[in-house]
Image 1 (cartoon, rainbow, N blue to C red):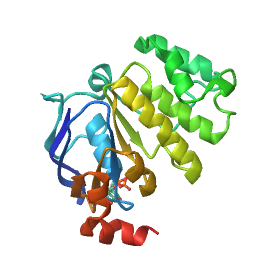
Image 2: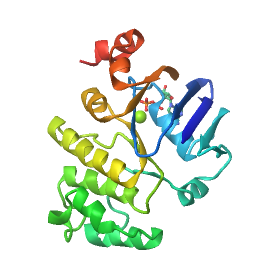
Image 3: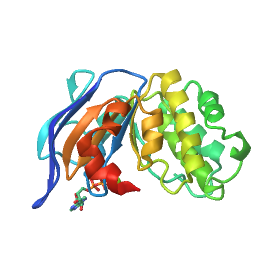
Length: 232
Ligand SMILES: Nc1ncnc2c1ncn2[C@@H]1O[C@H](COP(=O)(O)OP(=O)(O)O)[C@@H](O)[C@H]1O
Ligand SMILES: [Mg+2]
């Protein structure tokens, strides 16, 4: 359903992403992106969402070449992303924010998202005063509204404890399956990635190391020496 081919992004003389190709075959899967700092993970996400124009290469979704499409076009055609912020308008409650976005995007089942992310206990509180872990789940809930087909999450668990990260992935994996959303997730906690993701892409220095099952990626020599060996 998603295919990137020879995707390359240069910032002046820095090649942040260098000829990366991989595919996500099915709907309703969690696909992890791992790699050391500066590997090009965020640049890859930005090239797929259209925030960053690739220097070279193509992006296809459901067989359609979307490389030249705008961010807005992609959003209208089922691509969403998280923003690592929870206040669209300061002072609005969690309920008001979610309901606002749900009415804009025509979400038929907001209650399902709210329940799946366990947001009832903060529903009528201003989004900027709730606990940080709850804010992260609101952020992903916002990206889940409107039945996107493809969701891009860049470090959704940043700043969370290991236990909170596991809880967040547990919520995410349920919604991804139930709603048939495919999610691309950049995540530093490789244990969470290997436990919850259906497939994993590993990057290093802008290049693709491997795209495969969690078990194969975990034991891949290049991944171990580029990342896992030094991550601990
Ligand atoms: N706006 C930018 N201008 C110049 N260089 C950038 C910019 N954004 C990222 N880079 C460089 O591109 C490379 C990849 O960055 P990034 O995609 O943010 O990596 P990651 O998300 O894996 O940590 C790094 O070398 C980084 O310094
Ligand atoms: Mg990044």
